[in-house]
Each structure stands twice: as C-alpha cells, then as structure tokens.
Length: 427
Image (cartoon, rainbow, N blue to C red; front, top):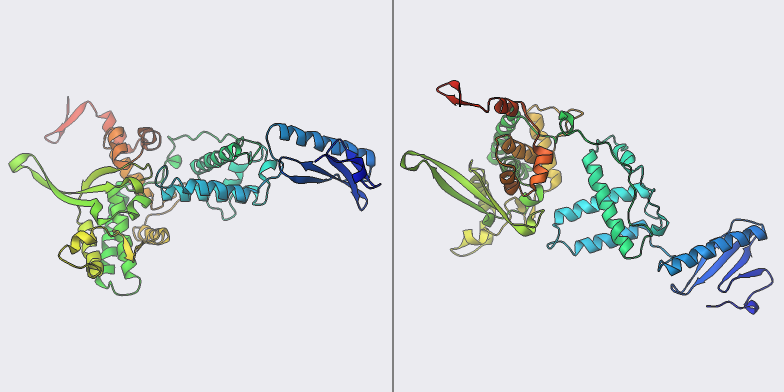
C-alpha cells in the first residue's frame, strides 16, 4: 500500500512510501504498512521532538525493511503460544518417535522455562542471551527444592530443541539460546552419583515391604488398604526389575511369563524365573525388549489379588486369557496407581526402614532403578548386557553408573586370586 501526500492531514508526516508519523497527545507515533502481513506496525516514538521522532521512525523503517527482505515477519506470537505449538507437534510423535512419558517430561521442562522467561513475551523479541542465567535461577527455587545439574542440562536441551523448531517455522529470529556453561560434574564424587541404596538398606526395605503388603492384604477391604497393597507390590517389583515408572505402570499380565530353568543337569538347581516383555509402545526408546529376573512370588501373589477382584468382568472358559490383557497395577476400570501414590508409599517405606534423607542424597522411587543397574554393573556384567536388560545405551551405563563401590574396588584388587576351600589362591 503506497501512501500518497493527499492522504495526510496537516499534523501527519509521510515517511518514504508506506509509513507515516503522527501525534497522539504531545508524543509522536509511527505506523507503517506491512504488505506481506497485511497489517500496520505501530510504534510509540516516545518523544515530543519532531526531528528526534523522524530519526527514530527512519530507524524502525529500515529495520522492518531488512526483516521483510529476510522473509521474517514483524508480528509475533507469545512464548506461551510457541510452547503450545511445539507440544502439539510433539504430541503427534507419540507412539512413533516418543512415548507418553517423554512427552510429559518435555511439557514439564517447557513449563519451567515459561516461569523463567514469562508467558506473554513475544517470541520475536527474544535474544540469544536472554537465558544466560537460566541454570542459576532454576537451582535457586523458592521452595528450596534441590535441582540437579543434570536436570537443568536436560531442560536446556529441550528448550533449544523447541526454539530451533520455532525458528524453522519463522516464529523466532533466533535458533537457540546461549546458555551459560555449567560447571563440569565430577562423576567420581559420592554426592554427584545418582541416588541409590546399599545392599543392607535394600534388605531392610524388602523386609518392610513384605510386612507392608501383608498388613494391607489381611484387611484388604478397609479403606486405603487396596491401594497400599498394590503400590507395595509395585515398589517391590520395581526393586527387582529396574523398570522405569512408565514402562512398569503399562505392564499387562500378557507381558509376564513364569517358567523354570535348570542349571547343572539332573543333579543341578532349578530356578523359578519371570520373563518380562516391555512393549515398544510403552518403552522410552520405542523398542521391545525382554529380560528375565528371579521369581520371588510377587507377580503370582499380585495376580491372585487382581484376578479375584476383576475376573467377574470376563465370561467363558478363557477367563484367564481375557484377563491377561488387563493392567498389572490396575485399581479400577483402566486406571492404575498414580505417581503421587507411589511417592507417598515410597516415603512411608523409607521411613519404616529407618533410612535417612541427607542434603546430598535425594532418594526417590527411581532410586530402585539406580540400585538395580548399579548392582549389575558392580557384579561385572558387561555394560552391553546391562544396557540391553534396562533399555538404555552402553554410553549411559558407562557414564552414569560405572562408579566404583567399596566391594567393587576390593574385587578389582583381588582379580588375580580365586576363592577356594576358604582361602584366596593366586590364579
């Protein structure tokens, strides 16, 4: 839209071919027609001086012209709208590139970023340096909740992935933030290792879980005891299997197979084992995996509890076959126990086992997975075997879990000896 002289009143000043200066009250304003966006860009020049207003207006004019030639638009959506767009895109990837749990994690990361940057900030006003203090601000939470450096690094990675995606869709003028480099973590320090348990603590936890489940099952019809029992089974199976929460909660009875395995032939030892199948659609890495653990009867006991409650929903001789498609940790309908319930009963068990939280030791239900992996790593299982069993990468196993325990150090020191007839004999 080309502006002509006759279109202006006496108190308006044309600027080049498609902009105009005008007064609102005592201050000069500017408007410029943007043909590609079919809208006016409007600015308050914040000055009473005509000459200063013209200088500022020319600066805005050239800036907008440069953006126009670069194919960038002036009008911008907000950060909140940008997050919503990105999450809508990621939602379409559920089942093909990510799982529901990963989507929820991405959503949580971006909500933390919105709290930091502001929900009404225009995306196109963002600069690469706007998140330099993100790591510092995230670790200084109002509720004094400790945030690990690894968590902050993961959040920063998610944020920049979103910004890069928005840049490709011409919603931002930057393709990422220049986050301030965080201090390198010394993985060898005890306080920087992932929170886990000692063997003695696990023994105490197992004993308390056994009592916890038994107490709940004795009076299963009393309020709160059903969820207490099922969550108790969840925690025990988590400890025995090292499953991620999302994988475990989506297990169905058809994913579990009990069998016997003989070691040593006729005079050998028979082991009761359980084969667990983590389906691709429920796995964090979208890849089916199967692994075997020792059967300590918890799956069988939970099956009997659940079958008694839900078997009447199925008819015919193939009741058990039909029941096999139901969720293992089911409560009602298709709903199962919640993360909140898991956290609540985990804290109860930790308290009963008299395990203390410390400043540098953040114990959470996921700590059972850490223990499971650490135990196998320190039993000298090859990293590849541990990675396959746990559905993670060899790199992750080596980087995160291959820290040395006292028992491992002793084992390494005595690697040239073997234990025979109660004595250590050089090999």
